Image (cartoon, rainbow, N blue to C red; front, top):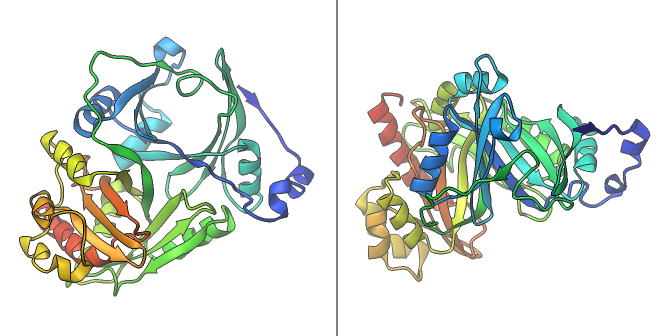
Length: 381
């Protein structure tokens, strides 16, 4: 791997900094989770969520400290990584946080400029630009720190034709359950500590050039017992959306406080993944053993009065627990899994947009009451 340096004058004279979107992002490249057993985690994501095997890296490919499996569905790529020895950075991350997201990788045209543009605006370096090369070409990557121990890695892959990245080989096992219809990552939600939301909103605004799409205060997101606040940041072309949550004062301990306690600090709370047919997708997921939060049957009694006409039959949505909300652009359907790890931390949202650009504000109360019922069962409310 070749380190690439850049002078201060080059940073200041970068053409991206002259105006416009100084950090163009094409989309989410991959999400890397540090997990205790990547082989078993890969089997779970294949079996439960219908991800397809893509690539492998480990001892057989020249890595000595870790093993990784890459699974893919639609445009969603997950790397599942475990340490091969004790006392490693990966192991310490798992010990503190449990299984969870370490890397949110962003696909860019120029990973060098992305790095130097962001650190010149105050980002803390994770690693300087490096070139990684094999017989299929080369990839340039660089990285910066964000909230908690989460990092962003910028990935430039226009000159690479391999299956995933250098040091990975194609993984083609005989076991390949069918996909369930997941297409791409719609948004990625981060939980931060008390009074931390605006700090990270400002980070994404100043350091990465994101804009605030919408904000929710404790009047929007609250129940009788708990509350939180949230602001949604988005990049220039709208392909990357990062809601940032922080706790708010309530009578009891909110879901964000519970997350921070069990995760051991700020981190990615959930991945929202899109589908074109949520009824079919959720039906498959349920049949594969994925557990979802459940709202009371009364949620559906006045649904049409609240959201107007929709294409789906309510009697199709009711047994699956799928929620509906409408904004000025259209409506959306969404549902949330229970935490997928032993700790009550990371979960998934399944979302189908029928024109709506929002995030389901009308469902917040029902959703949070469902989460509180789970907290009561865990004894953590």
